[in-house]
Length: 304
Image 1: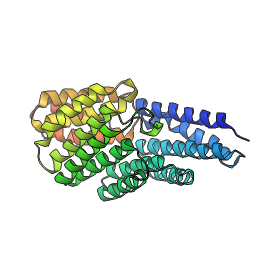
Image 2 (image 1 turned 120 degrees about the vertical axis):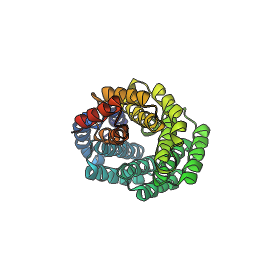
Image 3 (image 1 turned 45 degrees about the vertical axis):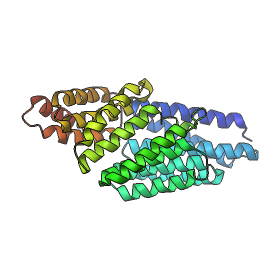
Image 4 (image 1 turned 120 degrees about the horizontal axis):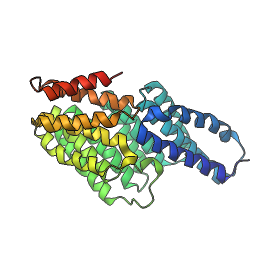
């Protein structure tokens, strides 16, 4: 029979692996996450009290949620969907609407990354339905600002800005004293990064003037991320470099891009490498600038 100590140990292992993912990328901890999943399978069928069993379902669901994210980050999209499906099923059994919403957010991000914006919006909407059954303003904010990003990538400027404003209001109203592990990443720095991402997307789809708005937001994000969020800092640096290049501040943009490349050497993330490609394309538009040409070539050389 399993007891609470078995569950708390699994929760701690998931926290540790999530921190590794944030620092070093999904490729760094993929094997360890898979091992923990195999080790957790016997727990599901083991005898336990009703209280312990519900918490176990949430713990295993979150481990699967992490596994889906790690696989997505490593470029294993089919595996990611498989893990997210298991996570949704277990979170549903446990009736944990906050975790259901978080899995929907992460599924939406998979579709967003691969250019399926309407499908991403559907998952973000499903997450918001789950959040509506709770009083979790932080989870609502995560879903709302990601919906804004998807709208921005579609070129829906008014919808994107409206959703971004709403998400910022939800963040301000959130109680951040006791945040679930799967949502702790969403701090002031991450909100600023998301706002910068929305305006960077709009600079491409609605008007280049949005790049000017994105720059201070992304600078705040880069300066706000600690060493525990290295990948997020790199992704913000990539967007910051892109916006500077759009603005014509080529020297500054190249500097930010090179800084991102230098930091990326210790992070194993196919998703991150994908996010460098638009920066290389933007750099190539400045074909008479040797620094921009060099940046594009270095990005191409770093790609697998």
